[in-house]
Length: 126
Image (cartoon, rainbow, N blue to C red; front, side, top):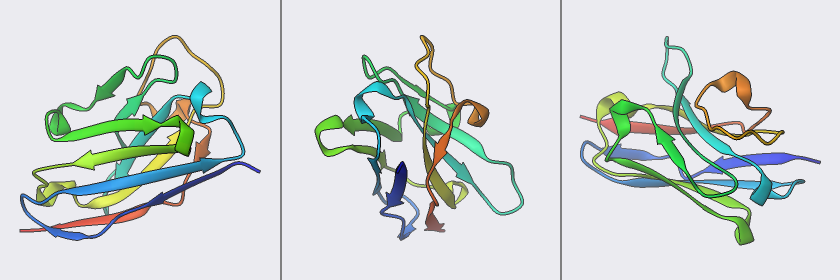
């Protein structure tokens, strides 16, 4: 049974840091690209960034470059989203998702991802 479970969401102050974890099971994490997404109230889901399966290539949306970092520990079946210098506009529910099939490219398009977690709330106070 495939499971994707996010954790680590919290209330933090503007300029603070937070690390989210995405623990997977039911499949071999090594072979799958993982994406992080977020959805704020009243807004569409946005691809924050992703990390490839084979060579740990990453891709980030411009608004988080230099502040958010995705990493993976395949031995622990875990992908991390390190968030620094958080801003109120980062407030959202954050989701982790895995691609089912291998692709030579990596993408932040939500439709390319097959297995999703339930999300974890990040709130940044001003």
